[in-house]
Image 1 (tube, one colour):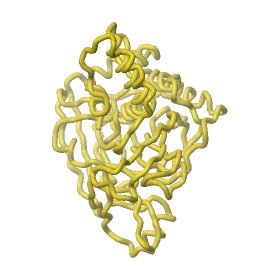
Image 2 (cartoon, helix red, strand yellow; image 1 turned 45 degrees about the vertical axis):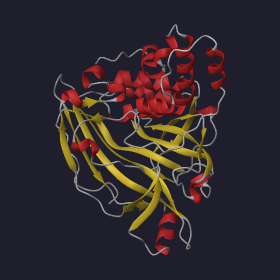
Image 3 (spheres, helix red, strand yellow; image 1 turned 90 degrees about the vertical axis):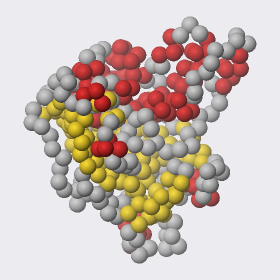
Image 4 (cartoon, helix red, strand yellow; image 1 turned 135 degrees about the vertical axis):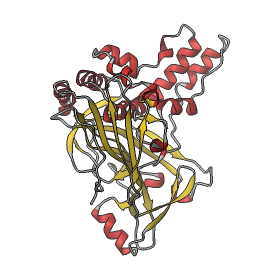
Length: 379
């Protein structure tokens, strides 16, 4: 689900309302946020392409690494230092990105609870930054696997099953320990789109100024409307979606879009300056790599008794969005959702459990046409 779809689903655009309705709409701003369904797809800021390769796999992963603790004031400036490194990186003709992404699922056999990364998948994409040149997307499913050594031990205790039936979104589905082959397709320039429908050419024309980037990526356009109803609606969206949704969206954009070094640095600074987003110092991503991180304020998610939700999935938990950067280069290592208060499907997990992540295995600029790797990432 991309950011536009998220906004449209939760906050449909209002019709014009009489002045007497403005007070009622203001009261809505005090309502607590609610997100009842997991985020799906390759990150909110990721590549949106038309073609078989673009739809070949919906991939979700997870981890069980400790979350960085509460906001660490000693971490202030670490992401800004990484941003300074980002703007010094060289460019090339092609931008490429290899990443894995997926969702954590909880298995509850009689032998003991454990977690797996279900629908684990991989995507490899590249974009030629020359006008009208296009790009390519490859994707494949990866074997479902236990998250940690402890989970692996519990999985073996349960008989090392090769398939996992889980509740995902609003239905049961089954994941397996089998991988698929790469599915690859060339993407025509007119179908290569990134966050908010931006083309490769649009991205190459982005400003480097932090204030302009904040307005373009982190401010809802209707906040400037003269219509009070439109402004109130936009403020509601801004408050409920931007804190974690925009952090995830821009994090995804930085992961796999051909963003020039100075623009990358400007977006990192813009994110770090946003209310509700905090530098939390050094952190470890779900693949065990160290970096420096930004985290959103946490929010609650309630799985209600609807769509036939199983009893074990019901309840409320809290999570926050986190983006981890390589402090040497400013590259995004991962975008992830981390449990801050156990409950619902994650009642048996600890704070820091990663419920979703999209992690970059390798990305950068090159002058040679990139090719997807043959080997699996977790061999």
